[in-house]
Image 1 (cartoon, rainbow, N blue to C red):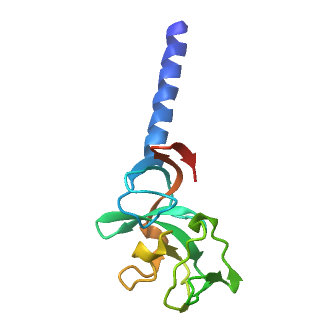
Image 2: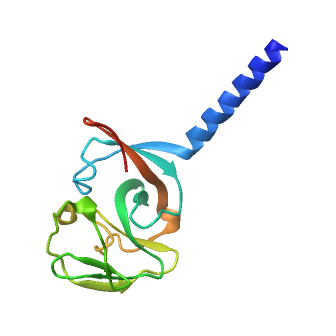
Image 3: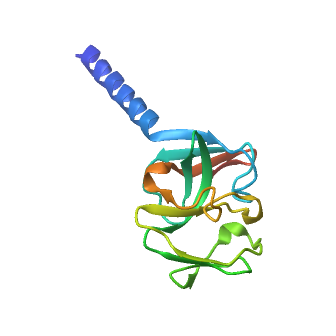
Length: 160
């Protein structure tokens, strides 16, 4: 009887480990495009998902590599960026506390995100290649790999 309980507990632990392994991933940040939120060398803990929410930090496929950016707008939303770098989604100024007051001038942009796609930007707008660039543009949900929920940095573990 005790042997059966031990086997059941071991099986449950193995199932839990397998579930965690298939749903969680760790990504090492390279570069400064997500500063001040994320820094070069930070480890980001992510949950695999193809549906990132607006404002979330997503891990995205870009060719054969991965990039990490913030989701600014989702399919069907109208996005406008003015010359001072302010971002409006459906005519409402986007609150971006993660920029910590570091807004950079930008080339004005006005567009509607196609359904099934996201528009992403790095938090360090001056040093980010993102959806504003024709190299990236809109990203289909299928290119989303995971959504970040925690970061391990030299300062410790923080939730995003």
